[in-house]
Image (cartoon, rainbow, N blue to C red):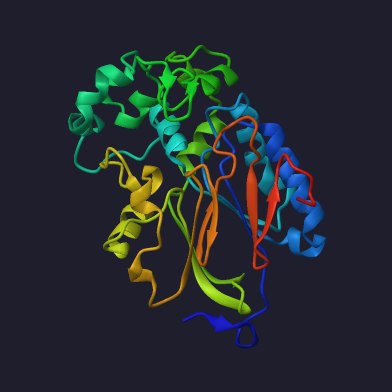
Length: 313
């Protein structure tokens, strides 16, 4: 059960940062705005949860990852959590740093989606033979270059991975990316978690500040066996060719009813929307679009801070 603040420890700052998608200036501006907005003593010890999708679409993936890698040394008293988004998962797959699948080969996961191979132009270059499906999709060349859903052209692949390749100095779809990505960046990708759980997180939901559990996962959780989903996410089960909790849409939008017995904040990015409804927080105002800001939510206050708008907004 959620508890009144009078029965709980002192609230602490938890900040959840939405999808960055290679926009280093937005990230730098957002971070500066957070430092200005949050009391310095609280910011110094805050828990910062990055909701994933650090790469693709924007031009500066390499600089974004450099920034993120540097945070623990710059802010040693903070706690930093780096979730994997579906784009980061695919990037990790391409450069070969995903955990190995238990009892099978990555290529065993291709068959379920092979009808899409020609249209999506899956990667067939050096190293593809035992690459996870999402790595092949990420490094491929999509046949129809126009993204009808967004009204813009794809940037290389269905993941818009072209700018990520270019940020490391290689053309889209080049196997040379594996050599171009520094070991520190590969380690960052390899260490990304698929889910983060946190107890004693405080949130102001209108009738006072309450204490809840928090689950952070890039896209969300499906209706069904939540414990089984959390097990898959905690073990990072790469036998799954498409992890719905990192890449789903409508099927992971809502909070599963199974969580209602123990009120739980479910926070995600991914959906190219800023949606705050009760304990369901979707923080992805930018969606990788150049003209839209990167956003963050501060708990318990529920303040929204943006990376390309004035602090007062």
